[in-house]
Amino acid sequence: MKFVDEALIDVTAGNGGAGCVSFRREKFIPFGGPDGGDGGRGGSVWALADRNINTLIDYRYARRHEAKNGEQGRGSDQFGAASPDIELRMPVGTMVSDAESGELLVELLEHGQRALLVKGGDGGFGNLHFKTSTNRSPRQKTPGWPGEARKLRLELRVLADVGLLGMPNAGKSTLIAAISNARPKIADYPFTTLHPNLGVVRVGPERSFVVADIPGLIEGASEGAGLGHQFLRHLQRTRLLLHIVDAAPFDDAVDPVVQARAIVAELKKYDPKLHAKPRWLVFNKLDMVPAEERERRVQDWVRRLRFKGPVFSISALAREGLQPLVEAVYRHVALEHRAAALPDPRFDAALPADG
Image (cartoon, rainbow, N blue to C red; front, side, top):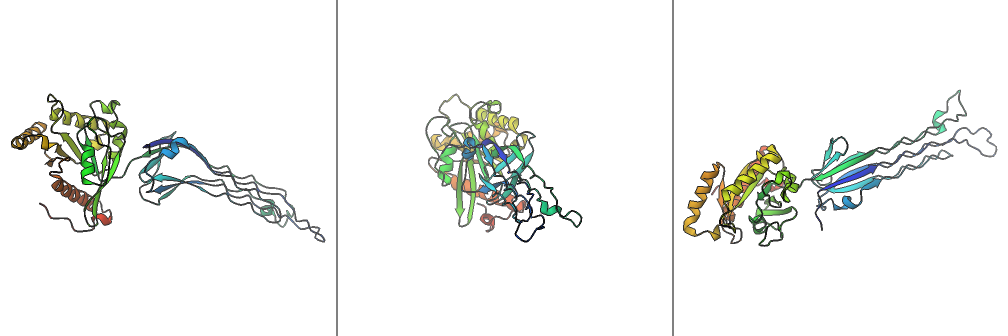
């Protein structure tokens, strides 16, 4: 299925039904009085978060959603029926904004969360409502109130604990396939990943975290070059960024330090808050570097980058060095959740010991 994370839709609530002017007419009851009922309420449009949906593709092709109008009132004290509401199911993590003002209306962060998008109009009053002791045969009624209408922008930001970023062909897809249940497309050419992939990494019983892999970034991504800039928004909700660096690029003239600096510069241009997130360096493809040179090369790269955070050396293809990385990431994410006082059964268990 095609991955779609942006959509524009028009939503219109139903109008309320008009009230009715009617008088009771029965044999032997010449002055039955008013019996015109009220109109029914128009249908509203709601958003519903559904964890079984992972893309906004349905709203790319079905952009207009209208609820039905309420029924008009009738005689014999019959009120018009209210129109049923419409529920629009959206992926968890969807942000709904007003397309004209840019105002954020709601963020759907939990499965089953409902939010009112546009409210249906109330029904009008029938002449039954206007009966008084001095006005026994009222002929007044009111029309139904109009329903609301809006043009909305839907933006999906996936909910993940950890985000992978790096140059094309750095091995992000191989890594997420090695440590999680995700099965992204893997090939020996750049830009294999065309849309974000999510994987659940299971560290132990009831201990897991979610990893998001986005298309590779290149220099100039913040100005629109390549594909990765279109999906950087999916890293904005993560608690940790793993910067995957290709330690053995195809071209010997390519410097991993230069590539790493280019990624950091693009992050800063795109969003300073994203740039300020905790970021760890992960040097991948160490199996392609001679064993006697690995430690020296990694130390030299870290020194040139002046990086002060955690550094890991792995080979995702050979599955070397993955267990220490996974355990360290889990400890960090668990502490972040506890610091934010977020109840999550995945992190209720005791933290694993270091080392």
